[in-house]
Image 1 (tube, rainbow, N blue to C red):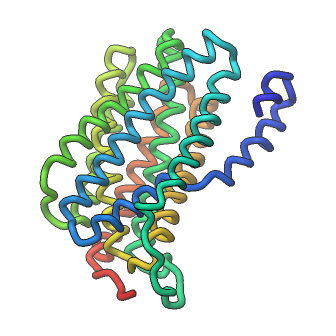
Image 2 (spheres, rainbow, N blue to C red):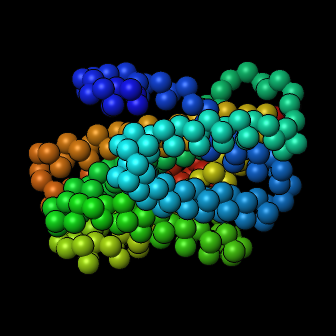
Length: 302
């Protein structure tokens, strides 16, 4: 991809290069599976660990775009991508070298697949729509900021959304969880759906920035609760399968949402860009609400 960009290759070659990213390991799901295995018998510690993991994610989402912008504008246009590839390669090897925290191999699981668990299907579909919120909101925010005449501020404004999630994750992780995990997931998705609605009324950078911070505050609690539910819905022998399945659904949603957000901007204009994330958030809430009874099903035996 770096060579294609540097040599000015046709756009279709970039799509071919991007397809290679499908071979990247799902580090997010594997990390969360390790936390779940380390604190299998300590729900409070597992809650704190999942919160910490989500906060670290948000810090990376804040620092990554800013670092890429600096590298691409001050070094060379390809520097951001080269740095990202180097960090991914190095980080993956370092992660794989941590044999001490690897979950021990379990007994061969019973026949069937994790997706046969009704509760996991609800979480998967909810995360699919939630991912669409994230993907479309990023595209919508870039379009909105450009329409306000502040195109260079896109990275900083996007970082505000991650900052809101980071702040909420710190608070959520410090407090003991209340109520059922299924109820918390529905509440989190509902809060997300309500929080993105005011973005439709943002007509300047001064109003958009704080609204994005508030919209991001529903992200971390929803993600943390969703991963907690995955742990409770499936047996330990299928934990990594369940985590990876849900995480893949989230990534598919992000990709689909980005495409939908781009279509919305091109056909309806930047002022209507946030229609895509608002719609996706409403769908996520509808799925979570309709499937809330399945989230109370006890986990199957191994």
